[in-house]
Structures are given as C-alpha cells and as structure tokens.
Amino acid sequence: MIGRAQLHRQLQSVPRIIRAEVGNTLRQQAADLSRQIRTAAPRDDGVLQASVGWKWLQRRTDGREGFAVRVFAGGRQAFYATFLEFGTSTRKPHPFFWPVYRANRSRIRGALSRAVTRAVRKGI
Image (tube, rainbow, N blue to C red; front, top):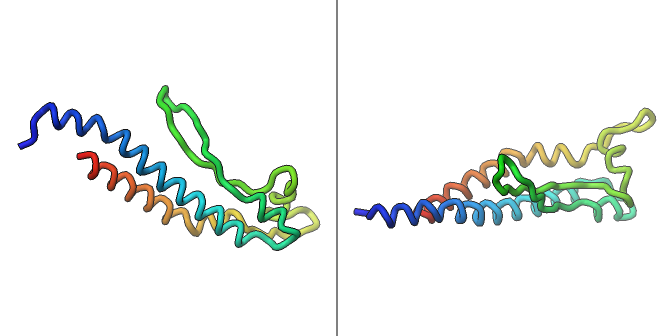
C-alpha cells in the first residue's frame, strides 16, 4: 500500500515529467514535419527549402508557463512561399506546406497523447 506522503510526492512530480516527455516528443514531431515540408517544397535555387524550419514559442497562458512550436516556411529571402502555397491572380497554387501538415496532424496528436500517457505512468 502506498503512503499518503509518497503518493503526494509522486503526484507533484507528474507535471515536470509530462513537460519533459511532451517537450521531447514535440521537438521530434516538429523536426520531422519541417523535414517533410522541406522535401515537398518546390525545387528552386534552394532558398525556399532552406527557409523551412521550426522554433520554440515561449508563452504564458492563464498565468502558467506553456510551450509550443511553430513550423514555418518563407521569410525575407523566400518571401514568395505564401504566393507559391496559395497562388496569385496570375499563378496557380502549388501547395506544399498545409497538405503535409494535414497529412501528419493526427499522427502528431497521437504521438503527443502517447507522450502524456507515458509521462503519467512514469510519474506514478
């Protein structure tokens, strides 16, 4: 039988464990998604492919520290990424970003859900 103090310590450690486990999974999923988007991007002089990446976003939600990632394509050198993705009045769209995201969305959610489950099991 588990003691009350031991149970309290284990429950206190769960959020820390969840953050670590989910953070690692989020990092892996973001890197994989950006790699797939880079592969799907139209071939040009390499500027567009080089502009695809991801970064951590630090934000506060409801007074608590949270974390998220942003996967991106484009920027100053590859400003035309949006024009390629959605098209213009004279050019048909060549979507490369959103189709890859939509194809991987459920896999990413499942991986994050499994990460939370693993973390809870580790913590208790």
